[in-house]
Length: 180
Image (cartoon, rainbow, N blue to C red; front, side, top):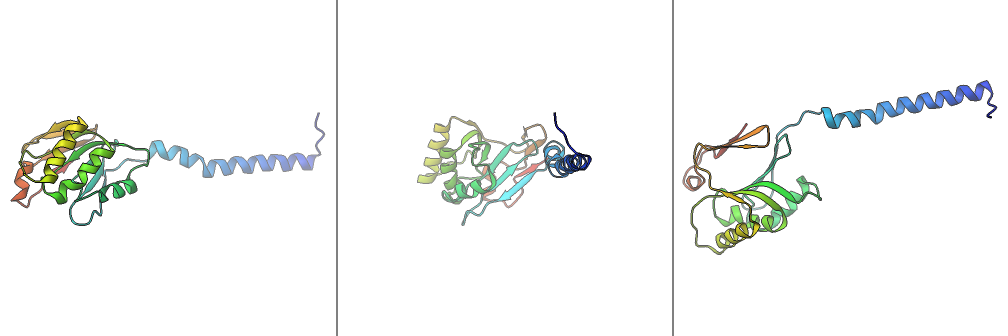
């Protein structure tokens, strides 16, 4: 059928061999890396201007957002650390009801599907606190008010431990939670 000279046959074998080696060197590591790469806890401190926002992703891909800054700037920052197609956040944690902590969470709750909201039971008579409470109610997420000493297993590998009740943060400079 094909009449190839010995030289052409050797050249064809060499090209196939080099193609196989190229494939093994450049594509096989990328394929195996996705299943063998160890997973780590990822913590991103988001630049939201005045205020705080911390995005955490556990080794088993559970996403936690602690506070959201004063306004919608948190959405831009989340766009930098989350996939554009990811519209879910597992846990939103509001440490207290001041605008520089929950103002941006109103926008987060409107944009993302949030499975659970951890919040303080402190009452604030501010417009931002009222909007936050209404947005949490509209989201229909599980709402939790953690107490000191409570532990929550988030995913299969991470434990969220509360050292203080959230409302105690307003008067105390201490560690709120610990991730294992």
